[in-house]
Amino acid sequence: MTVGPESASSTPGPACYGRGGEHPTVTDADLILGFLNADFFLGGSMSLNKEAAITAMKNKIADPLGITVEAAAWGIHRIVNENMANAARVHIIEKGLDPRFFSMLAFGGAGPVHAFHVARLMNAPQLIIPAGAGVLSALGFLVSPVAKEEIFSYISVLENLDWQRVNKMISTLTQKGKQFVMNAGIDPKDIQVNVTCDMRYAGQGHDIHVKMPNGILGKASMDEIIGNFKKEYSTRYGRIIEGIPVEAITWRILVKGPSPRFIPKQAGIESGATALKGSRNVFWGQDFVNTPVYERYAITTDMALKGPCIIEEYESTTVVGQNAIVRVDEFKNIIIEMEY
Image 1 (cartoon, one colour):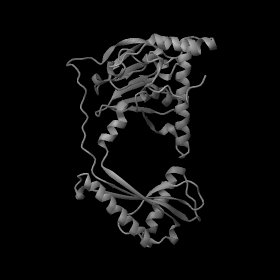
Image 2 (cartoon, helix red, strand yellow; image 1 turned 120 degrees about the vertical axis):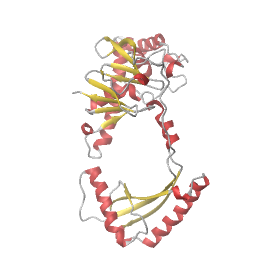
Image 3 (cartoon, helix red, strand yellow; image 1 turned 90 degrees about the vertical axis):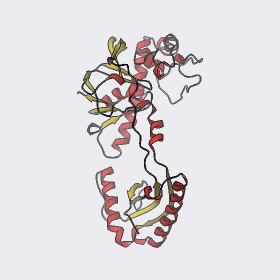
Image 4 (tube, helix red, strand yellow; image 1 turned 135 degrees about the vertical axis):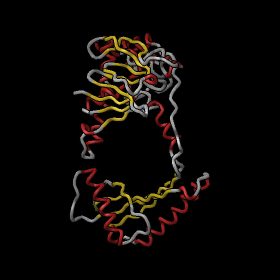
């Protein structure tokens, strides 16, 4: 059994969408397992057809493999979780880091559905589901500052750099970026300029971003630049290499205005509403278990919920397995402490 890389997309989409899809997808599996609420998908604005999901799972996977529909759905859920965990492991280990010392942040409509089991596979100590996780990319767009990045390539070891050429290009591209930002209505006094350079040890094939000192650059800046490079290189790879010259590759000038002031508004909840919405049967690998379901917007900072549980909101659903404590912080983020 494999999951992906082909997608059912939104048309025809998962079988449970009722748009003609006949092949079971991850969404169908999550619905069959009880992780998703057929009547509260997208906050109740779209209903899911669980029977269609079961039929597709039975015809395409369960019957051909001689297993139950629940086992097939659980297999899909496990495979996609392992795929994500493996990709994350590779990404973090390449940087010389250990996932056991980091909190995991989950976002996207389906991210919080799978994040708990992905965090378990990585032995992450904590899982964070930010407010608005299901629309985090759109939220990021709204709070991003107006910005323009200008880039130029000039490959040379630092000792041989023509600093006059570098400073001239930085000045020219800074002015170009400032003009763009000012045309968007940003006051010049609110504009920030950050200069970085993609650098590497000469002969290497991978670059790292290194912050440049403020002001005019020259030979007097080299100690600080090399220091910044070594600090960044050591953070990523756990060591530095002596006796090899440092090479500058690509220069980046980021010109930006201030970030828009944005204060998320709490979703409207009736006065006196309780966080516990009810319960439903959820499959946790062995059998279905009657599992409490909570309303995210009604969970308060003084509450501590125990897994397993399901937490529903308009844009996503958070699945929490066993041996975990769930709290909400002052910023409405869900904080899940993993117990091992």
